[in-house]
Length: 109
Picture 1 (cartoon, rainbow, N blue to C red):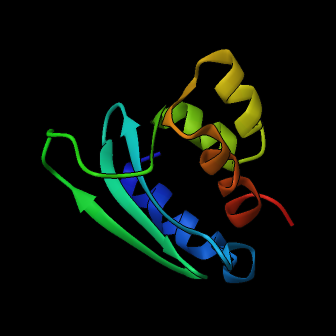
Picture 2: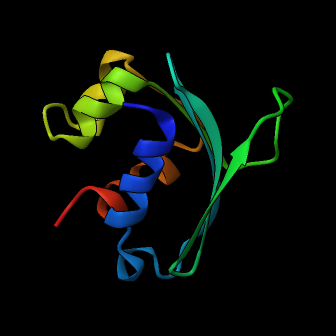
């Protein structure tokens, strides 16, 4: 799944009500062919994805790295985000609790 396609799908799935009272910045790094990095800003129910081209570190609360194929399986419901994290398919750098908050915002319900 190309990175931009995955981001477009996440935009469709975004549940503003689940993101109330959350202010955090994530760097989502989608690895593999057609991959990309996106600064993902959630601010009290609002969402913004900003393509990130620079390889330097960027100030964020949490970095999530996942291979495009694994992300596709997560988004199709063939693998849970928790299983992906525990198996090493999805890597979290930063506050794990913040990463877990993304599940109800994008994947549940």
